[in-house]
Image (tube, rainbow, N blue to C red):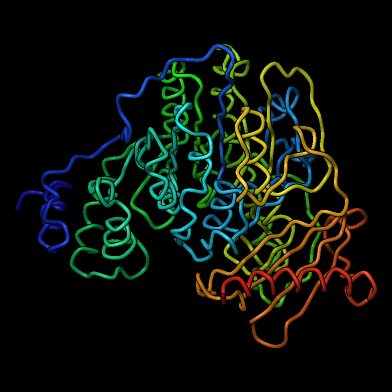
Length: 513
């Protein structure tokens, strides 16, 4: 019997009934959704290039003072940038964190609360690409399919939408073959029938998918990844860091004359699984020992030794990512792109290795899992500016619009970033919401909500086992969040609690009405 090919598998998939048109579709590397529009460059208008590194916490970056030398190239960029030291994501995992970044609204507004959730239909036009408008050439790429769901929602506002598998070495992603309804295909095939979790939903297609994938991986030979290349979660999509950076680099070169541009590149790494190349593996076998913190009641009870091992692998992966990104930075400097564009480096959320928990799929909202890097290099900037004021991912959209001379829409819930048009506001409150098991369009009753006000951070747990509870930390004296002040400073706790609960009540009342 001849070996089953990927084409054979797609033919078999067509027999399921929902894929009758599969044979007439084609697989796109880069799909241009809008054609025929003039892309003539304006000599004065600056563009915007955004890099989102998935699951990159600011707490493990040497550019922010981390003792391991994880980010020498980001340090080089920071020397000519505005660097934000207390920047928090509005969510602690991809779906709400990215949606807040792209809409400038909090999770309780855009409602992309659940894993792989979507932005509420009535708010779909409230996005970064729509706000910049047709005077910009708007580009979007994400290796993370959860983000692709949201980018597809913005389809009418995106001129080039690059498929998640575009720069991969091995892929068996089926949904991209359905150009007219990719989201439904991703969910039906890649998230359901053929998902590479422990037990696939379909024994037939799951088995065929695994056999095909095993065959493809057996043909993959590369000394850079002796244990196999990195992959994106349970999707059949494997990549090399070098190839992804090369793909983005070539795309930057190809579109370098199409100014002004708005380009959004959402890269999977350093999201797990952490697979650095041999050059960076075992780089951080050292004497660094982060603070040991007591296990939290909502954590997974992972041992301290395992957490330290996972963290070392994560740090090695960050160093690998930074090294590859250095080549893009070299090109941007040489080609003059940094003189023509605002360059933004950030993440959708962080990663934690403490209190018995690792990763970010957690109800916890401690600093490592929500403290995101934010580095913005302005055209012509030659020195570093450090901003220690607390900021939020909802602030990025209005700030970029302002810098590009565009109107800030009234639906935006963020403010202009200090140092880039905004001012320091000690009384301002920002929020992070974790509500992945709360119904998307119901009042928020099962969640963790963190409120940052000045140096204080109040965390509220509600809807879990036991009564609702609070924790309070002062980042000015306790950045490691070791000293819970909630029972020790009742006056401050009472004031902050009232504000957080009033805010949540107001949000929930809008949902009910």
